[in-house]
Length: 338
Image 1 (cartoon, one colour):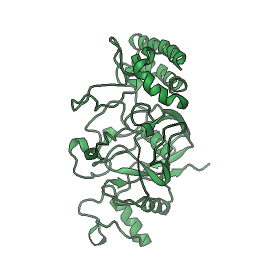
Image 2: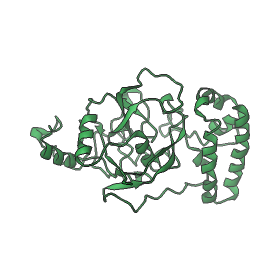
Image 3: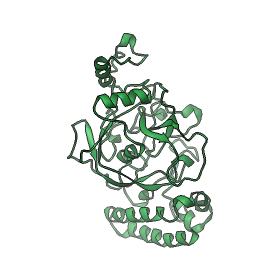
Image 4: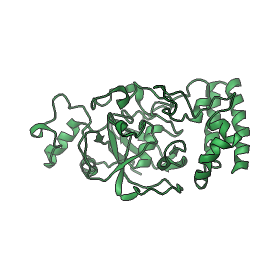
């Protein structure tokens, strides 16, 4: 592994030189293959435990991951709150001067105006920089599918309960939507409730892979809007949010495919069990098919429990499928017809 990292350091420094002598767009084009190539060597799944230590001890890895005397690490940045450990990694993409061009949301092949089309293909999933259940960063893939641009709202869910005689969320007064909350995401819904709604709508819940691809694009953005944390691009607990907000309230926080609130507002149920990513050797007692994955963070998050920032696209949470609370919601997906 050390030999591989040494070779990669040559490419990394060549890439840095390209950043200074080429335009940001040209440098960015060179980055994708470098990042993908890197994850197949130093970041291979079987090396995850060793790599976690080597990136802080081996010079050729440390220069990239933690920064040398004359190198600004693309994986670290000052904490907006001032704490020394509260900022997340930065993608290697941020070594490029200026912001990389954002992937345009596809404008064709939509199931309806309320869904985005996500093409089949590979994308960067997971992360090696935070908690072990998010690792390893790896190439994953999906088939072509559609996914809701917005989280399912109270108004949407009311149509479902009216037509199916489904019991409304318990906090709705006399079965009615709370005042002025028609366009807020529905909450206090279990995984079973979410699955039933999606089936009623002729859709299904997205898998974790589908959700993450729709959130971060093919190049593996840290946040839906890019690689820099921004307090004002989502409904998150760090701005002292007190509850859900109408869907679509943060247009600047959209994902590369145009999805709103894919970070913050409510955690979103996915149609995947909480299991380790392929090749992750770390054992967790919590893993199991009795739990489902939730993605995206929420207005509440678990900040008071020390869970840390849940805004990144690769973040994972989990609960047993019957759980309901005021920060759990969902959006639906649909497989593209052959």
